[in-house]
Structures are given as C-alpha cells and as structure tokens.
Length: 469
Image (cartoon, rainbow, N blue to C red; front, side, top):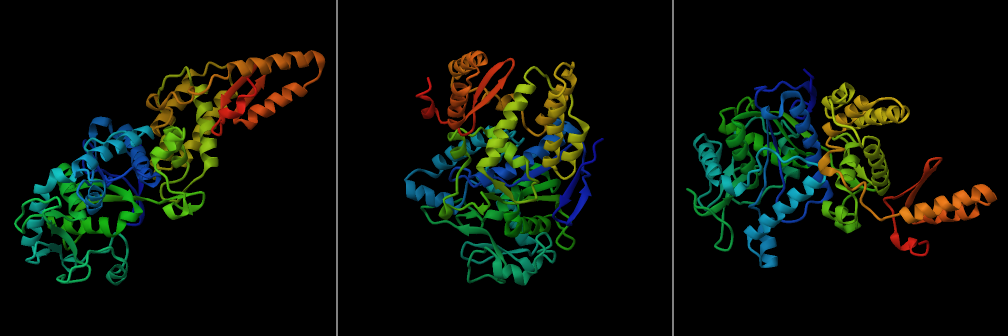
C-alpha cells in the first residue's frame, strides 16, 4: 500500500499517515462563512484538501473515506449583510452556499461526504457547552454569555507554538468585562430580538464561532478522528480553540490527545506578488475569473503548481501558460481512457501533497508521448490521463472549455491559401502580415506541413479580427 506522509502542524514533523481505522478514514476541513462570494484565496484550501481526498480514495477506497466540510451560517457578518440588504438571513445563506458549491465545482472540487450547516447543530453545541461547564472548563457570566476558561487547559498554544502572553497580544477575542482571563473566549452569547437566537440554559442566544466545528466534528466523525485541515490563518485562534474545547470535553485536558491526530495548514495566496487586498485593487472572486473566461481547470492548475505549504502567487502569465498546457494535454489525450495512475505521480502526491512534483511528472509523460506519435501508446496515454485525474485535472466534468471559442476556420483557410500561393511566388509578406495580425489579436497560430491550426489564446480579442475577415 502507498505510504502517505504528511507535515503535521501539531508535531511540526513529517509523519507517516496511519489512520485510526483504515476502513473509515476521517477528515474535517473548515468551510466558509456564507455571506458573500468566495474570493480566490478561499478556493485554495478547497483544492488542496480535494487532492488529499482523492489520494485517500485512491489508497483506501472511496467507500472508506469520510470527508466533512462545514458551512458557518450563523455569524455577525451574515447578520450585518442582512441588515444592509433588507433580505432575510436564510435567503442570504442559501444563496451564498449555492454560489460557493457552484464555484468550487467549477475548479474541480468533489463535494465532501457531509456538508453540515452550523444552524443544524445548535443542540449538539449546547450539550457540549453544558458538558464543559460541568467539567469546570467553562463558566456562564449570568448575563447570557458562556466563556471557555483557557487556564483550565494546560496544553493551550501547542498547535500554534505561541506563548499565552504572545497570544494575548495578538488574539482576536471578544471584549467582555467579566472574563476571568484575557484569553477566555466566547462559547455562547445573548441575542437581541432582531438577531438569530435559540433557547438555551443561559437564555436566548447564539453560539460563538469556535464551538460549531467542535460540535459538528464530534457528531459526524467521533471523539477522535484522523485529519483536520484549513488555511494557516485559522491556526490561531480558531483551531487552537477547537482543540482546547474538544480535548476538555473528551476528558483529555491534561494530555491534549483528543480530537484530530494530524493537522494540515495551507499557506496564503498572493496576486502578482502582493497580498490580495481590496485597497490594492487586486481582490477578486473565483466567479470574477470564471466570468472573465478563465476556465476553472486553469485556476486549479495554477494552484497545484505551488506546494500547499508555500505562498501561492496568482499571475496572469501563469494562467496563460496553464491554459496553453492544459489545452495541449487534452488534445494529446483526446482518444485515451484512464487506466491507472503512474507510480511516480502517486508517490509525489503521497509525499505531503507534492503537487508541483506530480505536475512535473505529467510534463515528462506528455513529452514522451508526443515524441512517439507513431507508437501504439494508448496505455501510456491512459496512464497519463489517470495520473492527471488523480490531481483533479483533465476530468470529464471540467472538459469543454478547450474546444469552446470562436470559429477561426475561415481565417485558417485564408492563411493556408496565402501560404500555398507564397510557395510559388516566393513572396511570403502577405503570410507574415496575416500571421502577425492574428497573433496580435491573441490567436495561437500553428503552421505545419499538414496544415494551419488557429486557436483563441487566453488574451484573445475578437474585435481585432473584424478587419481580417
């Protein structure tokens, strides 16, 4: 069996992955707060953990993997959006969750086995909070709040590697005058009549952010499970707080051995070398790129060219190169059927999701197949196709964009005719002029002994072709 090695944030070591139960490998990944479109950075962890999900399927079998990714549908940002728009919270969260799933499907992500919404698990959250109070790890303030007592968990800070003093200085914590300690965080808070709320032993209110993931993970995956993932911006305070409350609830306050065995965190995304920011004008959503004509498969390919634990830089040049590469690969493998993935590709992905190494192997296979066009190489093509599909590339679900586009056949015939004439007159100026005009319009021109091929490139501008028709 393939040995999977993962960089465990919890231990800061590369470790062999040994599931608790090979018959039921379990993974939880923090999902979106559904109040707006997913920006490009939101898609990176989805693609990263989708690759891991596919690898686990390959190694253990699809029927033996359970993947949970939640929706946060109770949050102050959602409340604010409802107040601004005059729409109901239900309308906003339903619409935004649907947008999210559509956009993540567009970049080739498989749906997890379970996609729970926080509002579906309020009773489980209340039960966990009651248990934490009973065990001395949480306390009500008498005014509708319940807070977790950080000092009751000696292992606090082990995941992020920060001292409590450092965390106090940089923590995103809710201000409450009645906290016993500055690091204590909210498990439950009161709701006014105009805000979502549920009845609880502490009055009508709503959960804090962190408790939802602990309650949903416990209910769907058990007290202890294999993998927990997310962006490294969630490491503190969200994941740190998840661990604290979950370990305390399960009776592991002293050793911190409860909850997830392996923690994976992806690095953040940049755009053209700079942090994505609305103030810099380089902030955009996945839907923005899709609407601009950049295929979801191209977005995915650009993501996978960089190791998940390194900052990823999105550039227009990378997107253009990815589009050219994928189009060539789809053409090369047009008649192939997937067989089994190449072992070198599987080994690369199993080595802490080394997707850039796996893509290098795909380039090697493509070069070898293209260099032997007369060889009966359907097996090699099938291997390359299966290898790409293990990365979520060249799948049938993402196909079609490579053939969609303008009909350039008339211009191809015109260029071919000019070339045929030039072969007799030896005057190639008309050929060069048309070819230059096509390239200036963003058309990819390929001329060979067998004919002329034209394709719209990533920078195609149809307005520049009007004078050529």
